[in-house]
Length: 388
Image (cartoon, rainbow, N blue to C red; front, side, top):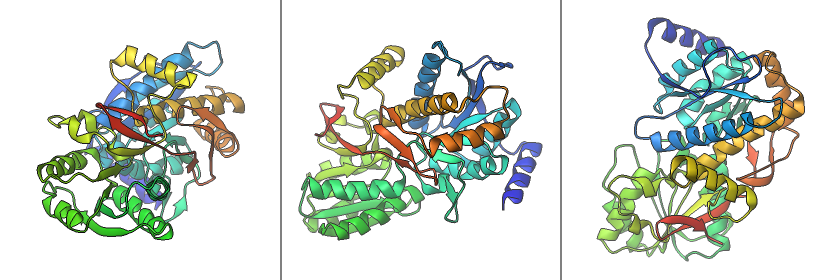
């Protein structure tokens, strides 16, 4: 399988079947004193809201670290994969030619799944800020061991969502609307259903849709007819904005509860953000938290980019600082080969504890899965606030 994927990459690059554009945070030249940090994400296209937040936060973290009087510095090269697996493969080839030593993998799960086997083949260390599917860190239930996640995995989001709805008694009857043709949504729903049964949640309706659906009236009517006072939406923000708009048109006002894919709904063009009032989101990060690290980060991000960072930005910031901690503790130097750096970082990530924006005492399993406590935020007055 690995040889076949490597051969496919070579063929794609040779014939120019796919392409990617770059945003080089360094000077693009040889920098013997800096680790070459690569990655890709959707800087254009419908998923660009995710990619831009990640990229901006990565730049901020790299600038801060490079200004410190420490041995570890980064030369950043972050490319646009447009949320397309083939472009992500092309970006990987470009980054490898550039001399990438350590990586942020990709922003979204499908590109992560496409390139992760190549990182495994070349023994390069990667940590994705936001690729939440288990396919980002494993294939056929076999974990790579050198590809890690900073974000919650999809199954963990499903379990944590069921627990939160039950523990906080958000409602008595639950409806679920999910997208069954993408691993992200289907994976979250599967684990949610298992945990909901264990928690004795009364799930009265489940509706599934596929890519391209933009009419959700039937789903909402069925949920309303079943008496659902909570609607769980393990989906992305575009479809969620349609559902909220159509629910309002039929005067259906349950509690809506989403996961990390809904983060970004307040920025959907043409969406009336008042309709998101009271929506819950599972998240590891709340921008209104009052701890010193969050206050400093939010202020810096707002000053530099003129907007409030979301959880994708926070996870990206933590991913860079986790790499910084691991490289420092391992005593790695920029003249080391990527494979040797990878071996050292795997040892660090599977034994160290990390304190960041998205959690204190964060650890990682040998599978690459992160362990940290989820929080919930609620949308009030057009912004995210801590639900607690």
